[in-house]
Image 1 (cartoon, rainbow, N blue to C red):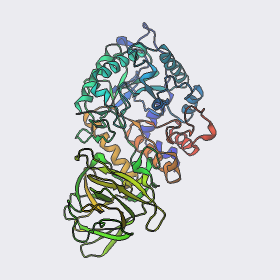
Image 2: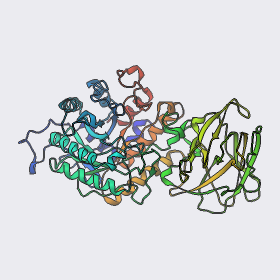
Image 3: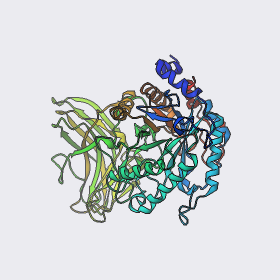
Image 4: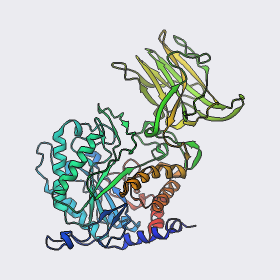
Length: 569
């Protein structure tokens, strides 16, 4: 069956998609050129679980992100794209661009509230290009006053209320200028919010922003993304949100589009992404035998020892020692423990301990080997994340590269700890079954290991609030259905603002992952934008990074053909 057939086999989905792609985007209405009740014609709106046009017909929104170099703080990223790029977007069958904004395009920190007309002229130019090709713009505040949110370091937005005042004023000004513009889908208030405290901070700010917009624009859709997490100190190690509403909350306005993002399985979609230390190993899709978990859904339960090693889990001796084999075993008795993984720890050790060549095996209640769960060489330190117990004041410890290995040429170690420090990797999760025994074998050596310190390998076990599924289409479906069920329960429209996978993944199933996502989104009627159009650390459909021009020779042709085949009416 062709890609087009797979996507359009549901007749309702096909009709919705065709209507969306053939409905024209009209010019902005003049002040007197409005429909009944003063509403400008052509502006889409929310109705129940759908986005609809003037006639009440559902509109399927399918598109891509224009990143606009927001992370580089470029004031006017005019080199990011031009009219030809809108033509290319349309040729892929898309009708929406999620248009990333940095507040610096519109005001300076030294002169808040003094609007830069050049920034608005740039938006006007993009509106004209988008109208020419029947594309709508979702204006998204990706970098607000107070800082980029996604990495948990933008706490100044929450701790300094002057930044919230400025963001409110900016959104009000944007809405005032584009209140009658049908090319603008709406206002996407804040990308991946991570508060400095409780969820109520985002609830209050989102409602404040909506009220400010409604003072000047009662018509456009306002998009409110779920809370992603909280991080009081701005360190970047934020706590993912874990509540019954999945970070969502109802907004007191009937014209709201509710947004979420997903890149699951993260170890696949972000493999070798430079800013993701958890994802520095090659992974494939589909792979039903490789489970994928998200910390949004996990609760820690147990390590294979608490304070002192059990019998058989020998610690690395004091001083300097050669490469030596070690083993630890643990029988799981609690049925609520769902997943496990190997970790390597060094506790209160001013010296260094190196680890290498490990294997995890599972045994049934009779002691018979069931399977090998994981096997690896600790050659690449970027694949292993160092965790420090922050309950220790001024906790110290570093991840180091070993000058040799047990079998290879390198290893990974922990050095100079004054607290509990652990190395772990998201590449080696395994399912856990009560009554079964799990064995970790590994090699380690010490270098000036401190007297009385504890350094060894261990297994950690966690509970998952969602079913544990292999790296396959069922995992993607379960992830989407979590959010879709919330939208159904509240009778509101849902929007996947970001999903995508790095170019490196296309040798290992990236096209299959995208095809599965498109199919699942179509059957669920969820509007979406793919991240992203160009560059952006390897996620772009076009490989060129800003400010280099987009070169069609650098397109991910497999992905372009996939979109064309799936979205063409």
